[in-house]
Image (cartoon, rainbow, N blue to C red):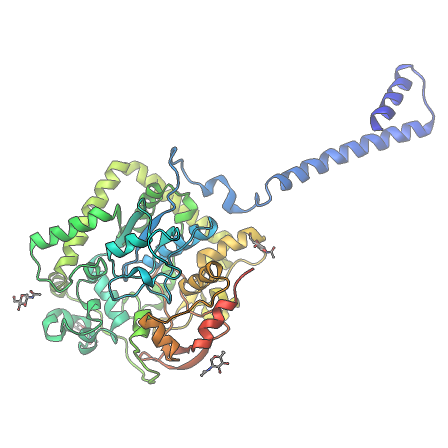
Length: 507
Ligand SMILES: *[C@@H]1O[C@H](CO)[C@@H](O)[C@H](O)[C@H]1NC(C)=O
Ligand SMILES: *[C@@H]1O[C@H](CO)[C@@H](O)[C@H](O)[C@H]1NC(C)=O
Ligand SMILES: *[C@@H]1O[C@H](CO)[C@@H](O)[C@H](O)[C@H]1NC(C)=O
Ligand SMILES: *[C@@H]1O[C@H](CO)[C@@H](O)[C@H](O)[C@H]1NC(C)=O
Ligand SMILES: *[C@@H]1O[C@H](CO)[C@@H](O)[C@H](O)[C@H]1NC(C)=O
């Protein structure tokens, strides 16, 4: 219709006749309409073609430097070692799996039977080898290759993370002081280091936290006396299964190697650092005073209110050396995997590594500015309004968390939220997605579950330095109970409460 009208107008013009005024008005109107249409079209196309196109998470920077023609790994087993920043890595696996609708081999409770050697039946929904395709496994377990292989496909990529045994022991001592009998008896870490045998009894439950914890988590005998031959056998065993061993001390370099090994986009390995919080929160230079889920499982505290002073973590050089000897198997492993780690970096190219690490750090800062209120300035737990990300107060350390930047568009908000969702809330969320019909806990086989299910006190779990912390199941079904050994509040849960968390599934 416009075309015909235009033709008529043109004819009028070409023929040199000045048409009536209405014709000129029509022409003007027509031009205006076409122009406006064009303009609107541009706008509509922009927002229509890329619905999430405005999210920072779909910008080219999210991909990072090219990975070549590889295909992303989607069968992944991560051995989540203790006190090694492994919760940060698990958050990445959770995020990637959730975004790609992958199936997780989730525990019935929060750990895959730890400290018992892993058994396939610890996996929720497991019904025999190959019955169901699981993509990602990453919750705490004591590694047991044969059983893991029943759950995970043959082409699974295995990786893990290790940390300097002295730093690990400091963290473990602070965290499991009241859980591991060997630590409980020692006044300070220095006293323990001076003569570990005085405090250590290999037969006592939870003493794995006090000796060769890495070795133990990898499923090996952590009480074996050190010999080079034995250590090498253990190393070989691990190498045969694990394609990549990350190093906590070189976390960013580890993330670059991981991303290239898994063929994942840059954003998948970006996490927020909570160093500022840690510095503020630390007491006497300790890196964290927390008690984990295992502590809760062990029934520590029992609601007995008792104010305690922070354990003394200071060590002399001599005591550090003694701790290395005491954890000789772990020290050997750490040195061996540190060596191969840097060999991998050399293969990757040091220069190349530097570039990717600085890109990773820039991206982390950028995402923090976008996602986090006040650019990621940590806030006290009670000021965080969103229960899904509210950390639970625990220990002497003031646990701080993040708040999301207000006013984010939905897509960006969802991606940001994933990055700061605490581990336990995240597991519950994935659980409720994978098992929409069934209540999350069917048979409490896990000792942790029994402890929690019986209405005992479950102590808030906090995280490693790099990550958000917290523990609050859906924020609905928990009540606060008494005080724990360190004077912190405890969370009370009962069976109803646990089940209740499963009904709060997202649509
Ligand atoms: C902490 O432990 C170190 C090493 O054992 C010791 O020298 C120091 O006196 C202790 N400090 C306190 C306050 O007990
Ligand atoms: C380690 O050696 C000590 C003596 O050096 C011995 O008493 C102990 O039984 C040995 N432990 C193991 C697990 O072999
Ligand atoms: C780990 O490797 C780096 C780089 O080679 C080296 O500087 C560092 O001393 C090593 N650490 C240990 C504990 O061997
Ligand atoms: C936000 O996006 C998610 C998925 O991207 C969707 O499931 C959810 O319904 C959206 N929420 C709103 C309020 O639009
Ligand atoms: C367990 O939790 C439910 C829901 O929060 C509550 O109604 C019930 O009273 C609790 N039972 C016990 C024994 O605490």
